[in-house]
Length: 138
Image (cartoon, rainbow, N blue to C red):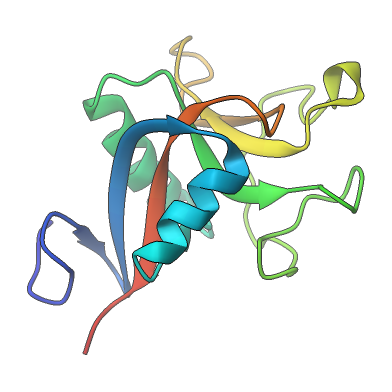
């Protein structure tokens, strides 16, 4: 839903505004890009929010997109950019697996309908689109 509580072209859900960015970037560059808009990479905290953000990504025709979650510096312990523990996760079975010891950032996976909307860990240097989230403007 588009609202006057959100900047133009952002969508509202609850107390946050969301924007899908189709330009592929590394996880760190995606976070910086969101920050330049007064936001951060989406921090999923409910099934409703996961479905909402996943639907934005799917509607754009993307197969993957970054989430605001990584284990950089805290191997095997995925944290939000704020350093907080996530209150909700939706990892694919067997994930996160840190394949090759180089998968430290979380992303949506959309390819297979059986796992659509579930999360995977990937190399933070991969170039993926992303979803930014900011709190509602008052």
